[in-house]
Length: 544
Ligand code: PEP
Ligand code: MG
Image: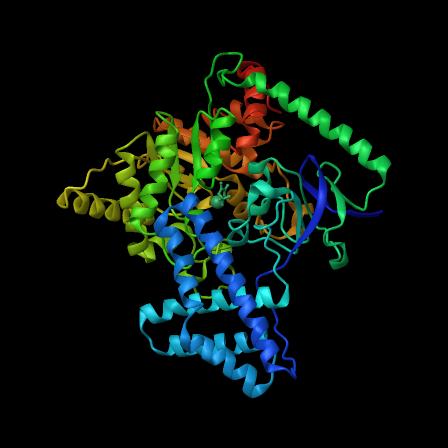
C-alpha cells in the first residue's frame, strides 16, 4: 500500500479506482515508419473513432445545452472528412515516412497559420476547430486520451490541476473524488467538489504508474491510499456508512424554515454553475439560487453562446425554481476561467486583469447579448441580476448606460422583457470602502468572500504555497463584512454572502450577528447551514 498526504479541502471518503487526468496539451514525437500503408490504416481507424466520439459528444451536449450549443460537434464531424486536411495528412505520412500523429500535428499547424493569416474573422475562428479535431485525433492515436466519458466505472480523478474549462467537460456523475497536485482551498476545483459533495485533496502528485490502481481518498485527513489493505478498506467502509447516516439525519432539515431561535428569517440559497446543479439545489431544499456562475455557459466551447442559447438556459433555471428567487451573475470570465475564443491578451496578473465586469464593459457586444437574454428571462419568473468585481462608481454608471440601451432596443423591437432587480458582488476592498454609495444604486449586495479575501489579504487564491498565510476567519475580512452589511441596511437593501465563507458553520453565528440577511452556499451545504441557523440565538451572541 502506498500513502500520500496532502491537504483535504472537502471531507469525505471515496473508495474506487484512480484515473489520471492528462492535460489536453500534448507533445507529439516524430517517428520514422517503414510501412506507410499500415500507418494510413492506423490513421483511418483513429478517424472513425473520432467521428464516433463526436457523435456521442453531440448527443450529450444536445441534452445539456440544446441544439445550438451541440452543433459544433456536428461541424467537427464534417471537418474530419475535409479533403484538403486528409490529403495533407496522407502526403506527410507517405512523403516524410513519419507517424500519423506527427502528420496530424504538422497539418494542424499549417492549416491554423493559413487560416489566421487570412485576417477574416470567420476563417480565424475556424482555426480553433482545426486545432480541436487535430487534438482529438492525436489523443486517440497516442492513447493519451484520459476522457472518462466512455468509462462506466466511477473514478477518483487525479490531475496536476483542473481548469474550469476541463471540469466542464467531465461527466460528473462518474467522479468519486478529486486529487490534484496544484490548486488551493478556494480554487474552482474545490468549489466544484463542494457542490458535488465529494472528497477533494490538493497537494498530492499521484505517480503515473498508479493509473487505474484501487485507491481510497480520505478528505478529512488529506490522505490518499493506493492499493489499500483489506483492513483499511473495512475501516473506511465503516466511515462511509457513518457519513451516509449523518446525511440521512440532515434530511430532517428539509422543509423547515431557516429561522434563528429569536425569529430572524435568513434567505438560504444555493450556488450553482449549470442547469444540472439546479437538481442538486432542489434536492437539498434551496430557498432560491443566490449565485448562478453564468460564465460556465461560456466555457468548454469554441464560440460565444448566442442570445437564444443563453435565454434557454436562464429560462430553464428560472422556471425550474418556480417562484423562488434566482440570482444570475453576469459573465465573470478571465483570471482562472479562460476560454481561448475570447482571445484575451496574456496577462502578468490575470486575477487583477481584464476579468468579469471589466471585460464586459470593454466588450459591450458580449455584455449586451447576455443582458438581453437575462432581461427576457426575467419576464418569466423571479430573476435578479448581479454584477461581479465592481470597484468604482464609474463602472456603475457605464453598466447603467448599457442597461438603458438594451431596454430601449428590446422595447423598440417589441420583445417581451422585464427589468430585473439588480445587485452587485462586493468582492474588492474598493467596493467595501464605497459600499455606502453603491448601496444607493442597487437592490442588494452579495459578498464574494473568495475574491474579497484574495484582494484584501493579497493572497492569490490559486496558489497553494500561500495556504499557511490564509486565514479563513481573517479579522480584516470579517470587519469588511460587518461594514458592508451596515451600509446596506442604512440604505434599506439586503446583504448576503455567496463566497465559501457562507457555508462555514463555525462562523455562522458571527455572520448572523453582523446582520447578514442571506447565505448562498453549495447545494450540499444547505442542510447543515440551516441546522446551524436554527440553533442560533442572535440576541445571545457576544462577539469578542
Ligand atoms: C467569490 O469571489 O467569493 C465568488 C463567490 O465568486 P467566484 O468564486 O466565482 O469568484
Ligand atoms: Mg469572485
